[in-house]
Amino acid sequence: MAPTKVLAGARVVLPTGTVDGGRVTVEGTRIADAAPGGSPAAGTVDLSGHWVVPGFVDLHNHGGGGASFTGGTAEDVLKGVRTHRAHGTTTVVASAVTGDLDFLARQAGMLAELAQQGEIAGIHFEGPFISPCRKGAHDEGLLRDPDPAEVRKLVDAAHGQARMMTLATELPGGLDSVRLLAEHGVIAAVGHTDATYEQTLRAIDAGATVATHLFNAMPPLGHRAPGPITALLEDERVTVELINDGTHLHPAALRLAFHHAGADRVAFITDAMDAAGFGDGRYMLGPLEVEVADGVARLVEGGSIAGSTLTLDRAFKRAVTVDGLSVEDVVRAISANPARLLGLDDRIGSLEPGKDADLVVLDDGFDLVGVMRRGEWVVDPRLG
Image (cartoon, rainbow, N blue to C red; front, side, top):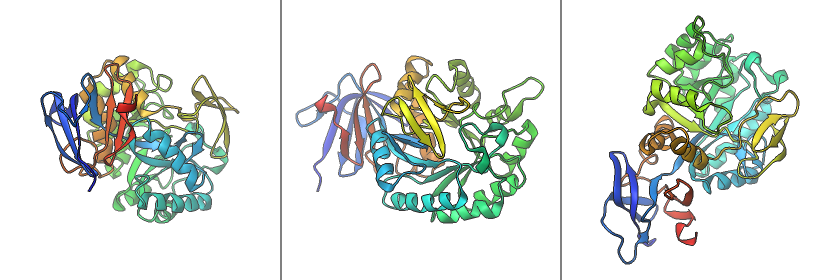
């Protein structure tokens, strides 16, 4: 039996609100209790002056630590996963980018094995079924219309571990593909799209429930042509992804999304590529070369933004200190909401008895000082 760990004295963010001087008791891999607890006592980890929040859940992530989820080996994927864990992401979905269908199917098979081992929470296919008009950092020569038979091929290749697929639903076969994904329990996400407002509404009615990095890689909001942004923000069935790195979104755009969708319909993502947690330099994102300078990733050819170098601890801090969001709302967006979307909210996403002991410790300036995953310290706050 693993020893009981008692974390005491911190401001603990629970589903019911923040508890000052809270206490989290961990037995083995699970949370045994999370409640008010008084002052730290002998045998407890004293976290006075700190915050304890649920472990972060990233729905959309292409790699980190110099390693790629999109084309790397299993060892590469694990390296990236460990990098993001050290930044508080205790649950990560591995995202693929546009590629040859056979290659994507092979990559999905490898990622599925890691998902079955509990290292990742499944697979997100971002492409190849996206619009050439809004391709971003995807190889236009490999894009294709969303043929339901080809969509099914990738879902099958994931051996039950496909969690989400991003589609330009206005393309031929788009709505039928959304319906197929919904039937198989895979999230259909609208993204890299040139859809109109009306076309986006039809996609939502067909079963699409997520907006892939809202605002990015889609037509801007217009007063005569409201486009997909308006449709995705106003429909209560949709959760909107936001990349809060200060590059992809102006703070006012982020606040607009929070205000209109509400905190229960926002999911912070990284859309990270290999350079996250690693540094500037040249990298590959799928078949395309990327230059990372001053932490911003852009395609060498054309200069389009190519994912991010974001980690979710930085997104959390920015949301509170720059965007002025409440800690409780940020916890919803970075933990509870993505856990719910993945159907894992019975195990992760909040600090409640019986759930996995996945948590993050932040200091009073919202810098990360501790990470626990399934009851074991990834980053031990006592060593800082």
